[in-house]
Image 1 (cartoon, rainbow, N blue to C red):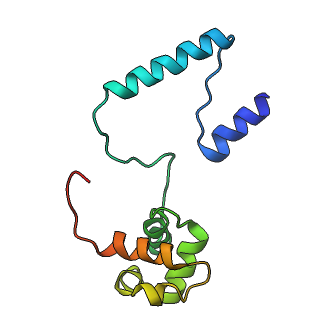
Image 2: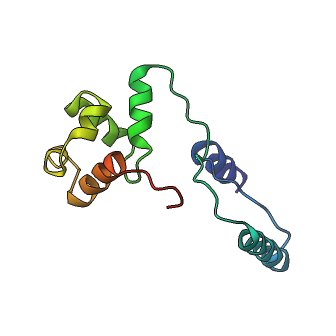
Length: 121
């Protein structure tokens, strides 16, 4: 059990809480729910430490921050379009030419990179 918890934390950044039994587990869940309901809307945050040291790593980091785009897909996009700007300027049909990019992902990538920022959304 301890090995699984350590792996979940180190490999996936999952925070693990232990309790002494069902009653304490219920108390913890209730406190978390209470806290979350009191909080106002929060800005999205990056979980874990993402570091990039080269321009290539930064480019992959930028693209992989789009929902549904992991590092492998980000690498495929940047390889195909050569630059982040190239990805941003691509149409949804052009994005779909990249393997594993279907219509929904292409539309999301295009929207995230091209839609005007609206504060509060």
